[in-house]
Image 1 (cartoon, rainbow, N blue to C red):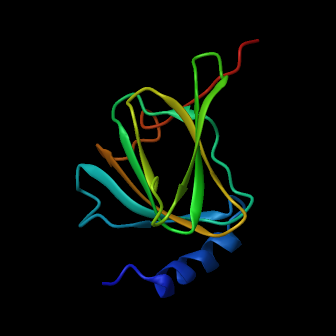
Image 2 (image 1 turned 135 degrees about the vertical axis):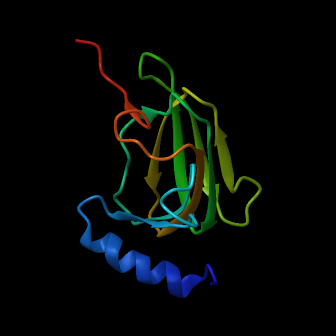
Amino acid sequence: MKLDKQLFEQIAVKAAQSPRLRMHYDLRDSEEENGQRMLNVLLPGTKSAIHRHTDTSEVVVCIYGSAIERFYDEQGNETEMVVMKAGSETPGVWIEQGLYHSLEATDEMGVIFEAKAHKYNPETTEQKYKTQS
C-alpha cells in the first residue's frame, strides 16, 4: 500500500466530516498489536487539547504539508512551538514521556505519522491538562 496523496485526500474527506477536523488512519497489523502507528490528517482549524502521555514517549513526523506542535510546562505555559513541515529541516518531533503538548493544523492540510508504545487505552493513554481553580 502506498502512503500517497490519493490516500491522504481520501482520509481528508472523512476529516472534513468530523467536528474535530482530523481523522486518523490505523497502520497497525492488528488491534492486538502492543503499540500505536497511524497517520493523522489535519485540516485547518483542528487543535488537540493540551495533554501528555504518562506511559510512553511519542514520535510525530509531518509527511505532507505542515503542522504545529506546542509544548507546555506543568502550569500550562507554552515553552516551545515547533512548526513541522514535510521535507524541511524540522519535519518532526520526539515528545518525551510526561511532557504536556498539543497539536494543531496550519493553514494547509497536514499529514503526520504518529507512533507510541502500548495499546490505546482511554483511561491511561492521554492525560488532559487540568487548569488550576
